[in-house]
Structure formats: structure tokens, C-alpha cells
Length: 305
View: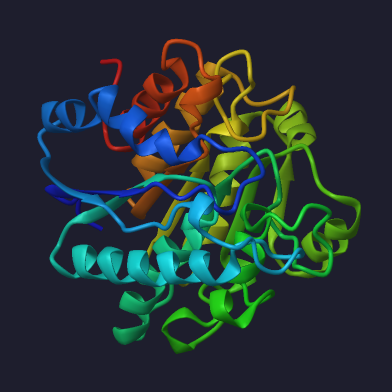
């Protein structure tokens, strides 16, 4: 793949899928951290397409207890998929700013639809402390941001799995899950039996991040036209990224996070990217958003030398 010359920045200020409020301010925090200016400094043309429309939870019924705000999340993801697909069709790389991780259902669906029309398939590298493979039947909280990866491989509510009229969006054998360290008890069989390849923090500790990322990229690119990267900032240790929706101790380090994104960039195979779960309400002077922007820069070509 040739490096795209333009990037479409798309805000998705959705926090209906999360249990804690605040990640709806994530897109603003990333823009305040000079995301667009930094991307321009790398030589990209940057088109900021603004924010996808999202309803406010205060004005809504929560809906089913096992999948809270499901209809509204599905509507937002349908809108986002349309915007992402059009941006990619226009020759730009979509960069989606979350919001909670349920926005990835929209961004990946948009890319998968675009490739499907060309009879190609999409791979997926999911960098996250959590597996995000619950379904309404297994979720202890009913929060949809714990379900998006399951939905993208065809497990979960039809309104989320079948955006664009088909499922799965990504073949499980082309999905790599990196940095996992907290999986719900009933969710574990989904991860083990799905065909998704999960690399836990133990794998990273034992083998090193470079080996894990090379395997992940191999999985996501085998027979595909490239891969989407979904970066949940809670994959990074809370000492470096305190302002996230669901922090978990023992994450990847500052330097490992940069290495992961540099290796992604070196592959030349990333088609699109989301950065999710930045929560400025519990952050310290916006430093999680600043780190998120740094990681985007590493993924898109910034080098030390």
C-alpha cells in the first residue's frame, strides 16, 4: 500500500456505551492537544470532518439492561460507518476519535463495506486492556463498549453485527487482540473459541512487544487488503494514561506503546485508525490525550531520526 497523502479526522463523541461519563469529550481533548497541526507537520493534508451526531444520555431511556442505549448506539455507528466509508472512498485515511469503544463498530463497518464492494477483506489489530467480546448474555454491566469486537466478528445484537447488511465485518482469523489483561469470566470462552488470536500482557512480558506486534500484523494482513487499528488508550498503563474510561494496572509502557505504533507504520498496511476511551474528566492536564496524539503520530510516520 502507498501512504495516503490525506487524513480525514472524524470525531465520534459517544459515551452511551460506557458506564462512566466523560469519554464524549475525548475528541475535543485530542483536538486541543493539536492533533491536526501535528498531522500537518508530517506532510499530510488534514480534513477535519467534525463530529458524527450523537444523542445525549440525559434525554434518553437507557433501554434494555443487558445492552444499554442499544438503538442509539446502533444509529450512531450506522452514521459513522457512512462517513468513514465515504472518506476512504475519497482517498483519505479515516482517523476516528472516540468516544467509547463501541464507536469502532461504526468505523470498522465502514471500512469493511468499502473493501467488500471491491471483493477484498479487512484485517483488525485491536490494542486494548479488555477483550471487548462480551454479548448481552454474558455482560456483567450491560455496557456496549464491552461488546464491539464480538459484534465485528458476528456475535451480538443484529443491529450492531449487520450494519451494511452483512456479518461478520472481519474474519476472526484476521483479528489480533494485543495487550489484554482483564477479561470477564463468561467472556473468556468467546475469546478462546472465536478464532481471534489474543496476545495477553503475559505474552508481551515473555516474548517482547516487537515479536507480538509482528505476529499480530501477520495475522491481520494474511489474505487481506490491509488492516484497521483500534487503539484503546486503556491498553497503556494508567501511570502514563490516567484519563481513560476503564483503567487497569499493569499495561504496556510509554515506550512499548510507541514501538507498537511504529511497527504498525513500518508495515505500510494500516488502512484506518481509531483512538478511543480518552476521558478528560479524570485526566491530569490532558496528558492522556497528548499521549494519544503522540501515538497517532508514531503510527503515521513520525520518527526519532
